[in-house]
Amino acid sequence: MKRLFAVVVSIICFLSAANAQKMENCFISMPNDNIVLLEEAWRKELVDLYKSGKPATVTNTMHGKSVLDKLTDHYLKLQTTEYSVVELKLLPLVNNTFVICMIQTVYGPVADSNVSFYTTEWQRIATENVFLPVTEDWFCKKDGDQDVLDILSRMGVFLVKYSLSDERTTLTAEYMTPYYLDDENQEIVKPVLKTENKTYEWKSGRYE
View 1 (cartoon, rainbow, N blue to C red):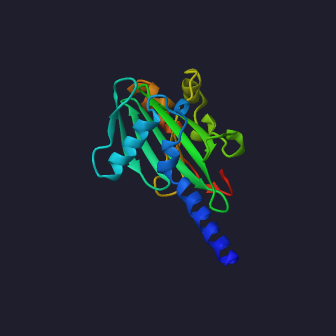
View 2 (cartoon, rainbow, N blue to C red; view 1 turned 30 degrees about the vertical axis):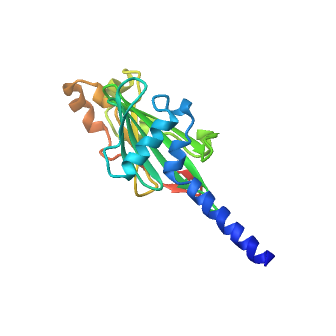
View 3 (cartoon, rainbow, N blue to C red; view 1 turned 90 degrees about the vertical axis):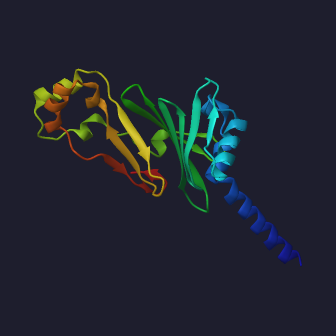
C-alpha cells in the first residue's frame, strides 16, 4: 500500500511539474518587470480569451492594444504594442525540464531584437551559456567589395531581427541594417550580402 501511495504521489508531482511548464502558465507567472505593459490579471485574460476562441485583445498600461496572436504548449507570440512583439519558447533540457527563450522585437521602423533566456521560474540565465549572437560579418560574402562593405560599417549600427519557430526549436536571425539605407544604397550593398538568414538549432541545451 505504501509503495502504491508513493507511485501515485510521484505521478501527481510529475504531472504537476509538466503542467507548470506549459507556456500559458509561464506567461501568466512572468514577472511584471519582464513585460511592463501587461499585469498578471491581463495576461491571464489574454490566455482565457485565446483558449475560448475569442479575439485575445486587452488594453495595456499605455492605453494601447495588446494581442495574443499564437499560443501552444511550448510557444507564444504577443503583439505587445503596434510597434513591438514578444515571442516565448520552451526549449527542452533533460528530465522534462525546459528553458524559456524570450525575444523582444521593436519596429522603429526597422526591426531590432533582444534575445534572453530564463528558467521556468523566471530566473535569468547568462546568455553566453546558451547562445552566441550572430555577428555582422556572417551576413557578408567573403569576396564582397570592401568599398561597398564600408557603406554598412559607416552606419555605426547593427540591427538583427530574431524569430522563433512555433513548431520547431529553431531560431532565425535576419540582417536588418541594410533596410536603414535608402533604396539606392540598398541596391548597392545587396551584391555583397548573403541571401539566406542564419538559422540556429537547439542542441544539447544551447543554440548552435
